[in-house]
Image (cartoon, rainbow, N blue to C red; front, side):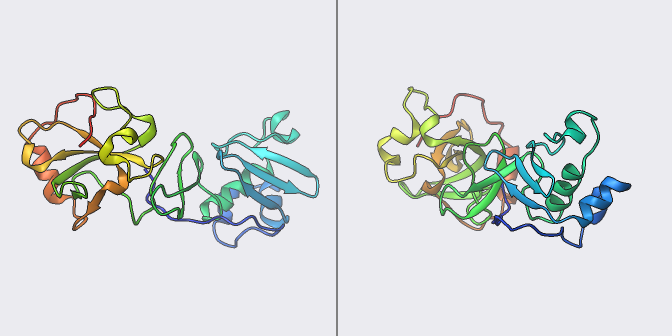
Amino acid sequence: MSTQTAHFEQPARRLPPETHLSEAGTGERARRARTEPMTIRPLRDGRVIVETDGGTYVVDADHDQCTCPDHAIRGTRCKHLRRVAIEAAAGRIPPAGMRQHVCGICGAHTVAAVDHATTLCEHHAFEPGELVVDRETGSLLIVVDQTAVRADDRRTDDGRLIADVETNRNYGDHEPVIDAVYASRLGRAKRYGFPASRLRHTDRDPARGQQLLASHQPDQSAPATG
């Protein structure tokens, strides 16, 4: 789940930020990572393009592999990996294992795990235990999980895509599915999956819902839909 809103520019060649320079480590390669102008371009798949006077190279999404000869042939932690570490620590690019994304509800820039198909920004994200209201029925529910699965890629108990359920037609197919249980049915505690924007936040305080969930163990049946 992503709870960080961020927008990463596509900058011109520049020096690294003055903060977090220690991320480069020590030695000559660290010095070059700290002092040489480079263009750092994060890609949507989590990889990072690093442009220098000596060439253009690609750092992988985990920030531990680089296509430059210094790393690919010699196996060293090259200046490109060190520079990417500085930029990520300073918040100029997504952290290792993360990529640029947009919120499935409002389109705001955010970050998410590389393998997440959809996500929400901090303003729209849901927390386990949070009490929410179903916009279609007015029912009160307790959030169990914010998934990274799109509504058009998740099926109900009867095999329908959640996005194709009639009461979900007014919500985005691309939105993440939110798993929740009805507060009035905790004895059965069956999970239901909803497109994110179908659920309305209340007080955003997960404490009450978490206490209720702890006193009623949900079953692990396949998700359905309200």
